[in-house]
Amino acid sequence: MSDSFIAALAGFITAIVASIIASWVSFRSIRTEYKTKYHSELIGRQIQSCENLWSALGAASRTIGDQRLIVVNKKDATISVECAKKIYNDLSSVFNSSSGLYFSKNLRQSLFELRDFLGQEILLKVKKEAFLQWSKTKANDLDGYIQNLRNAIRHEVGVEDLTIAKTNRPE
Image 1 (cartoon, rainbow, N blue to C red):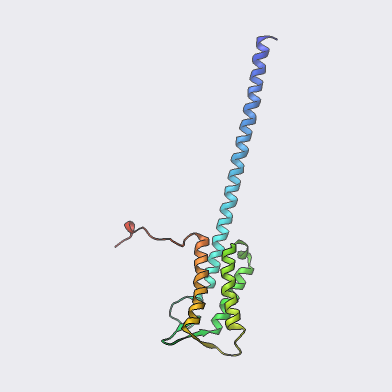
Image 2 (cartoon, rainbow, N blue to C red):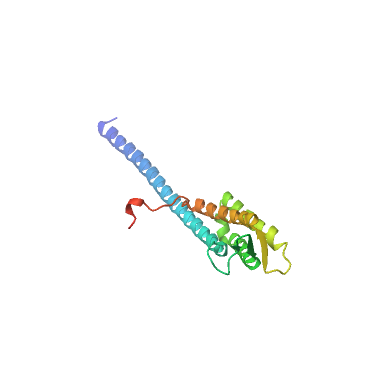
């Protein structure tokens, strides 16, 4: 074999190996980019679904108002049946929408615990009453289910310990 043929063969083999390596690197890069975009889209959908679920808990908040689920008095608590129905229906509606696809097992469990408590302790026991009188202990149990769901949502989104840096806070 001549030296020029060996040099040409070595160049040809080098070009093939370089082409294979470049193709492999390019494939891995595109695959990683695709997976990153896909996961970003899923994370965005999961956050949006958690925001939808958070909104469904509006009537369960602890603010003052006549459209709230629990109103605590000195000795007992008043439970609004209308608010319980609204929260029950809103939780079911959010779960059965496309948002429900993106809830983790832990979040679903907290959601169902609250929904089942509302259904079994309020909705199935009520005839025509607009309000129920409960002990503070039982109202605290209901509030515990609400807080568990709120904490599960915070955990899902990753903001359960979100704080503003003390050094950057305006005075």
